[in-house]
Figure 1 (spheres, each protein chain N blue to C red):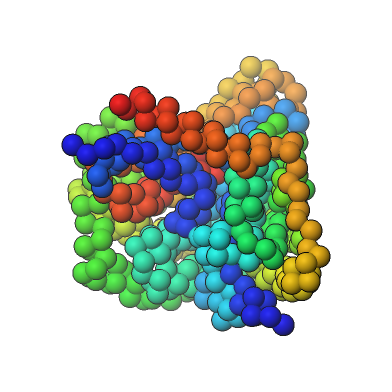
Figure 2 (figure 1 turned 45 degrees about the horizontal axis):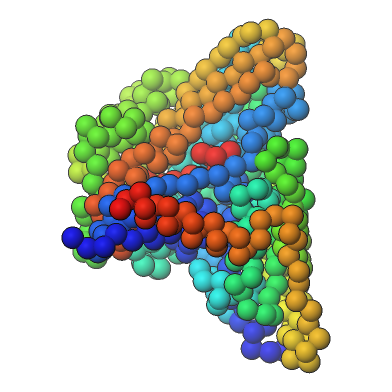
Length: 176
Length: 362
């Protein structure tokens, strides 16, 4: 097992979750479950992260944010969908602003069900994800890892950057 | 005068558990203006009332927000009970308040932890969250869920808590008091905490009233407003209720108000456990809300006043359901406190209002 799989760093993003799964993700990091003793560290920077924990479903606005964070993470990387909303859209599947599970925006490696997902299920999913991470590392080293293509149905990540630049310059103009 | 720059803050930011985007217009190190952008968590669940009937919709309201989940199911049930003139059994009202106050304890402990994390006090963060797990254990023992409780329903509550278990809850809370006292000592006596929070994000009483700020955010600025003092539901049985306020109006005051509210909630639970009557738990609910019937109700969530509106149309499906959440009020105050603050204080400023974006955007 490589060093990466022994001490994976995670990044968490709330897509459009109700907070229920988010506080369970945080509960994993705090004394009762304390995954830090296994070397799992929560980071705020996508460029430092190996595992991407996403809670909640995709809507028109956050799909591009998800793709942005995903594309900033270095290979090899693993995406875990935490909670039933991230898996399929869950109870909000029928809402007008919900497009469905996060696999509509980025490729998902492990699905952790539950509403709200239990910390045990998250830890279990991370352990499964470590296996996937190791496989990907091996194929990256041998040059056979295929780069995932992000669905273009949602706004592409670089378009979002362009939008933000336009918005920032428009703001800069208004403030003089 | 320095050059003005726009710095994007969020939606993904280490200090934010939830996505919110701020365009910070800064000059040197001072924030001139903060322009919030929302919509990352919008699901559109108010419209689901037209697809799920009014009893099934309780499950959806619980998932408006995972932190105040019980409060939202309680608020929705209260509104439907007003709409259909349903009398709720007294024991159910007491149990609702007990669960709701337990939610407040867990929500405030969660926030105190996040605040400690926000100013870099990792140890305090872990200790707050360790203490919070005791409340989640009570939830799990009484309802089976840690986050989503599914205990409240239109007409009453789904589960009972036996009297000996209620006394056990009070014993657990009494045990927590001592440990929480230790934590409070760090929050209130540690000089680094005082230096970090004192004077950060000041909001005067007049500004708080002008901007219609609610909840602990308003009470920390000296506004004596707490919906619990009007005595709805089980709160009417309390001998006395005084809203906890502070006159300082800064981040330190918000921390103080929430810490004292934790102890107040424990007192409320202990008092109600002593007085709880023995009645049935559910009134059976028949029929549907009448055509053009309208009902509103209010509730004190951990983050402040929450306002519910429902309109019936004679069928099992509501015509319209609307919630005005505390954070949607408090965001105005947040942008106000951000004006003129240091760039380094922005994360702390955002944290001290205890934003719940998931409630706000639904």
